[in-house]
Image (cartoon, rainbow, N blue to C red; front, top):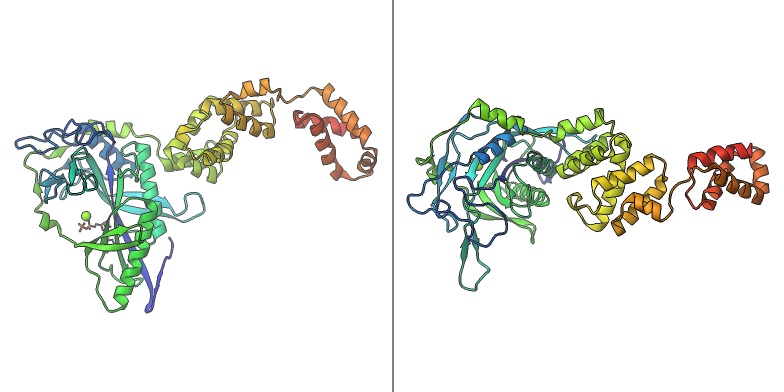
Length: 492
Ligand code: ADP
Ligand code: MG
């Protein structure tokens, strides 16, 4: 979709990107034990004997974790494998008491799927591309080592040990940092809609391994490197940019790219070699003898499918066709599930009193503007959807003008008072009282005889002046429609 190129001394190069995203599954308990997965608890307070790998302990598969991965697969139109199996991936590390990770290499739970991305989600005219997903498999997370608690000691926290992860492996379909960024954002949005992962990259519940290679356009794929555990969209894009540049420089200097694992250093904005890439056989993968193959029945699959919400793409189309929203507004409102939820509660609260268009415009300009200023997310908006709906109904019903509506909203933010109370207590009600308006019009006409003469002589533009003067005299509270009508009559 984009022709991103790296300029080298020997000509232009193309970058090829594949992402392996680890997403922590939202579930109360771990993949093979009943220990809690709550974030931020005391170290080692959520560790069962299974998680600590006590000898003789047997893993018991958590049905909920499997349902979450299946629902995720369905959300990206992937093939769900009714027969899958767990393998042991053997390696030693101090945060892995078992000495192996239970994962799925040969028979993953979810097969090929697709994620459709828009290069710039806020620009409905920007290019769209379908990125292939190779597979999603389910595996255990490791514990966490803590090296900074004591000058000479390291500690291990096993709370995360055994928590379920989905590894979502893309095909090498991306061709620019922007495409990779759009892919991660879209994947995160889908996971949040489905509710299978909270997508919080800062907390580590979603992290990406970034595979990058370069080639001359049209040639075979080059050798790739893999940069591990990249924890923000911005860093994913930076890694690709730096790594592609580095590879081009190596190749053009006559060197070779070795397949290896690298680490990203955000402070220096560069990647560094960590270890040469191990192959699957180095891990001595074999089927876990403690676990039977996983066989899913149709009832389970039907249950998973029935529990899926309306997903971002169909929702966005529906907002355009059914609600009549602009492509831009539909895109903004559906990008994040929190926004969509808020908007739909707002619509429900508005009932038939307010159009979806008016509600959408208010949310995107006024509410988002305020949240931006306050540095808050919509999920902890100081104004609730019900309070927003009350304000919108006052505007739609003509009790207050649009301009006054903005002022009332500011007061709502400051005081937490309801719109109706503010309008009542401060006497902001817009008046359609023709007597009061006519009286002010008469005064305006009497005070401006020259302008009246000019207007009657054909200077139509002056009409705006009279509207302005009348509104001013009414302290902004006159119904503009009524003012217009009465002025036309009075001026002849
Ligand atoms: P492995 O089994 O060695 O981990 P995979 O085939 O599973 O390799 O690929 C891992 C990731 O690397 C996938 O996301 C894939 O899209 C990506 N990838 C594979 N080949 C390339 C390449 N030449 N350039 C960039 N990414 C690649
Ligand atoms: Mg891999």
